Amino acid sequence: MGMTMTQKILAKHAGLDHVVPGQLIQAKLDIVMGNDITTAVALKEFAKTGAAEVFDKEKVVIVLDHFTPNKDIKAAEQYKSCRTFAYDMNIKNFFDVGKAGIEHALLPEQGIVVPGQVIIGADSHTCTYGALGAFSTGIGSTDMAIGMATGECWFKVPSAIKFNIIGKKPPYVSGKDVILHIIGKIGVDGALYRSMEFTGEGIQELTMDDRFTIANMAIEAGAKNGIFPIDEACIAYAKEHSQKPFDIYEADVDAEYDEEIIIDLSSLQPTVSFPHLPDNTRTIDHVGDVKIDQVVIGSCTNGRMDDMAIAADILRGKKVAEHVRTIIIPATQEIYLECIRRGYVSDFIEAGAIFSMPTCGPCLGGHMGILASGERCVSTTNRNFVGRMGHVESEVYLASPAVAAASAIAGKIADPRKIGGHE
Amino acid sequence: MNAKGHVLKYGDNVDTDVIIPARYLNVSNGEELAKYCMIDIDPDFTQKAKSGDIIVATKNFGCGSSREHAPLAIKCAGISCVIASTFARIFYRNAINIGLPILECDKAAKDIDNGDEVSIDFDSGIITNHTKNRTYQAQPFPPFIKEIMAIGGLVEQTKEKIKG
Image (tube, rainbow over the protein chains, first blue to last red):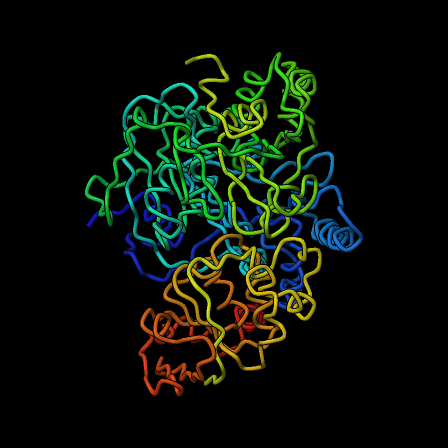
């Protein structure tokens, strides 16, 4: 029996010729990552192991991004403990205010993650790097601590669902619509414990930013990881951003999959997840009249250059509705600078939006845009659970940057094809 | 290893944001986190939960964030075990790693009601519902996980390895 792409990467890193689903393995790690919230716990566990130093100063990455800049005294104390640890351990890839961005946009941009690697991160959206053809998965603080101490992690080898992507992507349909459609179809536990392997000719239609968005939300279907083929676009991205050598893996032709699902891009529409689960999806023509109080465009899911560009195109020369607080957050300092260079920041501010420094802030109800009871937000983030962005009686509607920008102008959930003047 | 207590019952997709909302993640102390355990799904949880009590839920328990604060809050609230039809995978790992016993058993998860008195034999995986006078067979932990649990978690196991 052949192996899936994920199984081949795991076998190689476990020093095995072959692995099968369900097998427990110990794999060598290329990158171990944590953020401010999870590293604060991990460093205490690390100390308990008795390890004097981290296994590799180049391969441990700490990014302060969730409550950044320090949102209150308790968070400031946690940050201080992360800083002290990073400096004591001489961590080469430590990203604090000024260098930091949202981890899952930052690591690919900085060339820290490349194809074929095994990456663990103490953040559930670590699955993002599967867009680069790496095995990448979220773990908790104790796994991070052990990973930092030993350079290894235990895994149960996953089986996989194959997503065969076909067709051409229509205008105003993005990676976000693809993944919301998939989650709506298979459910929030539709890929539980398994890999989501994306393949097919339609992959060529997806930009790298689309792929990052799709892989990012694999966890919202319960998946262990999402993974894309290492094609020309992927190799070009990796070479542009990194000097690191990398291995190219592909699934065996006789690899076994639990099931195969065909996704025809040409049939997709802008899609919105209604409260309070990401699988509660509706296409834009079925959303009805949903008035909103806030729009957030940003996060590890949709704070990249493609996302800023479509938002700027829609908002340029228009005004956001009087009662809609519109918060736009570039995911990294580099994306921030590029938004300045391209004039997007003026477009956003003239439209009545605010443009913030990189932070995870509002996505997890941390700070920078918390919702009051009864308030509704259209957000390009990844979760719309009860109380996710604030009060337990607030509501989050997940959507693409195009839908979010169009909704900001309309004051209610709106079709970007209409606001954008293409229909 | 055994557990016995009364059941606090929940439904599908209990996510980490309702187990411990992010607004409380500016601390990492388990006792402090336990004060807010389950606050956004069951505001009276901390009053109701007695030491040794058992959480039972249906599918995809612990979905969402990787925050280890979630199993830690549950453990420090005195919960002796979580039984569910299925668990989200990061929550599953985290619970094992910090030594919070969890069992997957769809039959038990569906049949047990709020307030039932339940005991668990972890070696055999047998769950006994004393209120309904029924038993359910869960998959016992595989040996690899039993080893981690027996030594007191992944950190203790690694400590032994590092000491050589």
